[in-house]
Length: 97
Image (cartoon, rainbow, N blue to C red; front, side):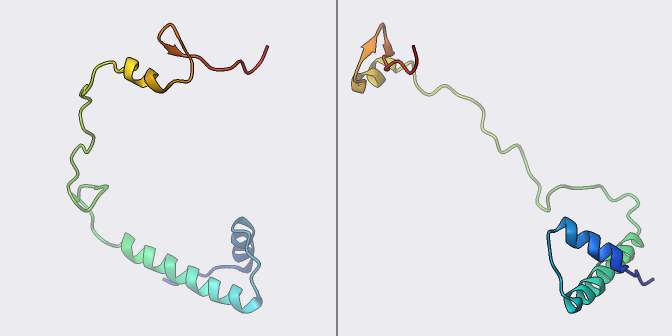
């Protein structure tokens, strides 16, 4: 079942993709798109009844680690290098009045 791509379709796709195609490139793109659509039609002929959809080819478990607190509040050590500090916080210059 050959899919025929029209000149208007190629022109529209070229506009969407912001491509300027020469006449030869346009003809090659029409052939390529037709072959792609033919292949998709062929894939649609496959019997996929009972085949479970998947998102990865390998089994994937939860890859996120659990949140574990590994240190206490270390604000005093963090403030040791502060140029200015006030009441246990960094003191920064005003950025507006």
